[in-house]
Image 1 (cartoon, rainbow, N blue to C red):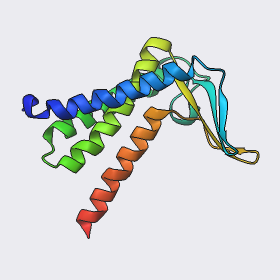
Image 2: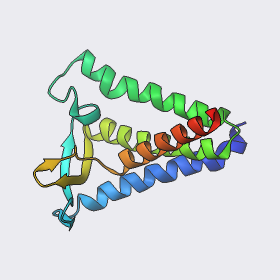
Image 3: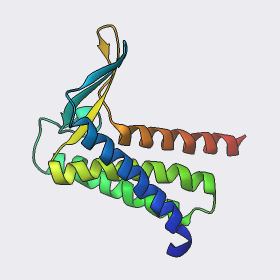
Image 4: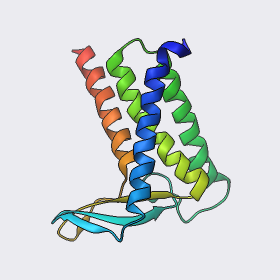
Length: 151
């Protein structure tokens, strides 16, 4: 079972590698503007999604910061291995690769490196990274598949 999933697990690690290499390269720069509404900046997120629990410490933060991502990542990899559908496997590889990329930051740095700053005027969307993009695209694709199958 694992052997037939090696390409998909390899793809998962490829997404993780892309995330880690983009973070590494960005941290070598001073940051810059790409467009009038998109900047590359360096921000550390020591919280959960959108910085939740960033100012907290203790068991509750550890559950949200390490426990939930590990459980979700394990579940996604299990679903990837069990799935027979290539589209679903691809989608889950994006989610798992992005999740692993952020988990690596959490374990080794104690915080996640974010750098994509999308803004319109004075309004700023929470800063994010390539791992977050992979996770979001993967979830979107899973949702499309789900709704496509329902209809």
